[in-house]
Image (cartoon, rainbow, N blue to C red; front, top):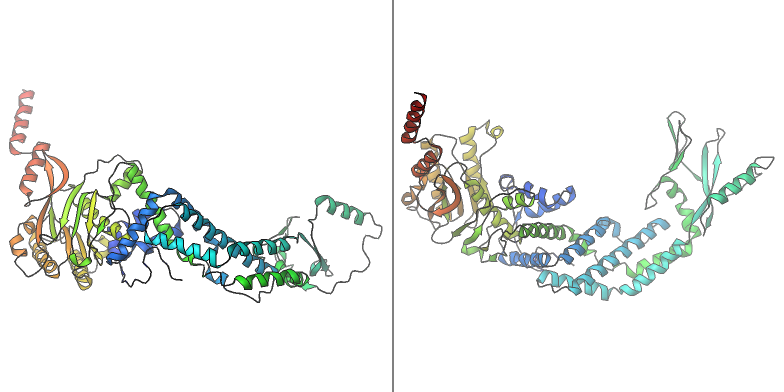
Length: 566
């Protein structure tokens, strides 16, 4: 059965992948660091978080599932326990039907695996029956595990497994005979008997003393036909290994190494005689397995990465809520609308930093992408929050499309088919083409893949060349965006670009260009954004006044200094 907590059953969808640049510019690794410290989980989460779909129905499905995880901490706890218990069952090849298993060990392990799977189904069924889950995904999962429990006859299966395992558990010890060669090295060995009690230390010592007290010191004769050859001894190495017995050349300790599956040299050597002796038990186990071999396709194992995704994100969002920051479930509108609006949006990374102990005063903003304006030219002072805001919009879009609550008081989005970013490149990446050439190449690659449903984030693009050259290219880039119909935040120091709205909006296209500014109040950066013409000169005056470097302030300071020195 095909079932997913990320995609509705029977729904056809398309998926695009974030570029390496977008993964870096959106700080996906930073998010992963704060979601989990386990490498295996990171790999699963990264794979899910770098896939983008703009199917509104798929995204609504995810939003509802995430909300159930967020509402019910007990669901998260049960699902996390489930993942831990499924970890040993994730290798699907281990669960394939094996009617000809040659040894008792493989049969018992098969029984243990089925037993563990039965326990997993039973546990998650009991959890979901207690909770008022609302999402289609969790309701479907509840019905699936209920059907598996009912149709697979779990009570009878559990009884069969317990009874069969009890037979196998009667084997408590094995008596092994070992033949020695002329150098007194173990040569061959075989099973002498299977016992239903453990050897005790006292019993072994008593037998040894009885043996040692005999005058001849050796028993006369010992016949057993089931001897098995172990690995040949090799006196040229520092350790002598006999099967999985090992004896150090400088130690008198003898170690016995085995695994839970019995897949070691000694176990392999005695597997056949043990299985032959316990033939009835082996046949009973095979019979039990045949009756329940089609118990299920172990479908829960395929859900492990998706369960981890919802558990880790709901844990993180819970911590952000505890900090008093607003989060919300995004309203998802058709992708063709190409709209997007946020109220009190903020950068998720800042909230995570506060969760980790920082005390940042996080500024929240509003923004709308609609038929009136879809491309924003964002200008403002250095360190005025332009990059933080640009990234905040991109992260909010991605979280909404992953189905996760958005860092905002209110969010309404038309999904994008992909998120393209163009942030400053590393110096090492520009050696061959130069900075301007490298930036132009990346922009060309973005346009070759982008559609009218795409979202673009440009951060100080084309700022590494002269103002005239950068402005010339930037104007053409923005005009191309308008023609294509994308949504974009382009933060830049090129105030002249934001002053060229009439020229930019004069070409054919459906995405109008607007000027957006980050504010400064009384010389202090407010980090608030607003639709307004670029105000580079006024920004400079405010900053100059704050730090006392206007002409009047400088002259007054010099005169005051000279007067004090007289």
